Length: 94
Image 1 (cartoon, one colour):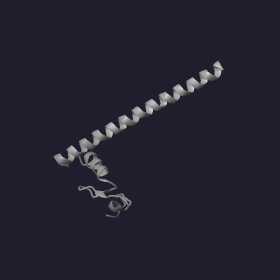
Image 2: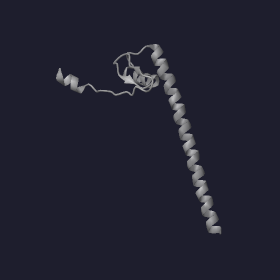
Image 3: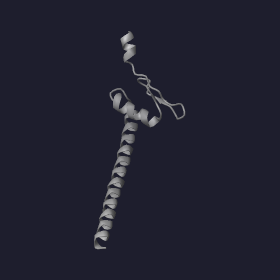
Image 4: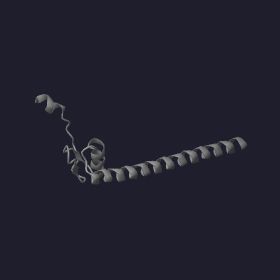
């Protein structure tokens, strides 16, 4: 019994934000979004259809946000590369 208790992780969730808990294992989360991801990944076999749908929507939103971030990063790298190449050409043409 002591070893079971020692293996259970302890979670510290700041009290300044909205709190959500997993309905299956009771793990606390800072937001409902994190709890939705947790339920969809860790409790996929047990969750309801509504929870699976919410997880799918959150996953799609996350994929879109990640695509947008990657796109903006690629454009930024391209622009910086172009800027340095342009400056290099100006210096050598000088």
